[in-house]
Image 1 (cartoon, rainbow, N blue to C red):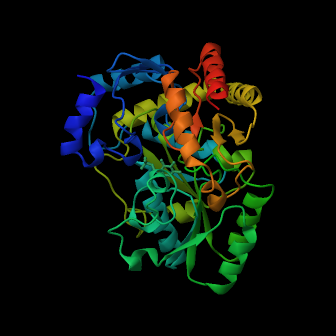
Image 2 (cartoon, rainbow, N blue to C red; image 1 turned 180 degrees about the horizontal axis):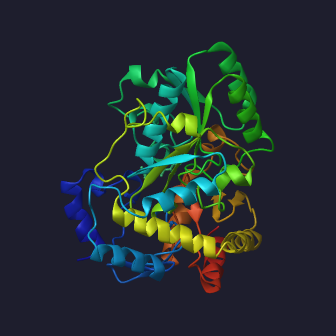
Length: 412
Ligand SMILES: *Cc1c(COP(=O)(O)O)cnc(C)c1O
């Protein structure tokens, strides 16, 4: 069956026809039949170069043979036990040793679950109620963080979801990115703040990059006021390098959340922190957190194989950085701005590089829509929103890169 027919059916059975809002491409999304390396093959018979990579998890590309083997080896042994499994300590040791200052980790099933638990933990540790999030920062789809969120929430123009009690978001303060002074003045006024949760690089409206010193400044300010700093590295963890944004920028948060890449393409999340903070998590401490699928054998097998692969090929980060630089050099800025960091990149339809959510929203989304359609018809699948990051994987060949750069340049 073709995409259009599938979508006609799905639309009557699934809200918007899709399982996650950003997939609702107009007039109908293409359906993927299979994927390999850097390519998606649709049920309509076309093959696309994938620059979306499932919105970040697929650093090694689709169906990587070593990850596939790890999953199938685990399948032979069963895929859900409800007991601890033997590779948990090793996985925990790798994640904590790759992120100095993160002493313990709890595995969960999604990035949303990780941020939800991290926020509860910060409140439990500080005995304070409020949190600060950054405008345009996306931390998953739970109540307390669905305020001026990026990702689908921005594309859809629904920064505040229906069904979120005002009393819940009353505990969520908003601050602009790249504005340490605004943080300082809020903390000087408001003494009930448990934590600042931030994507160190805004990935869900970006990438929007931190200005010189911004991350260091917010570290110093939060520390001075006894407020925990939560780095949401669900995208940037193992994406910007081993150690993620915190090692790249030399800033140690109190709590880190992970997801996406650490599951090797299977559902996962994790939150880590200093020992004195993580010791409060149940059953060791009073902050409750639990999950049927937490630390499930398949996700851990795929994730651990991914991290091992990365450790054996640390040069990929330099290579990926050079690849996005080559795209940037060949595309140039034109009337917009090309922004990149490591294997994350994006062309903003705005003359000057945006430095926060307000500026990102000034982009010409109609121009982006036309550009997106044109790139798709040239066989390049970009994330279908001006507000989502483009990702490269290690599976993108030089030929793919030439097609991407050529497609970008022609369509711009
Ligand atoms: C994707 C994402 C999440 C949510 O992760 P899910 O696995 O989709 O629940 C949270 N934070 C950031 C920064 C993300 O990019």
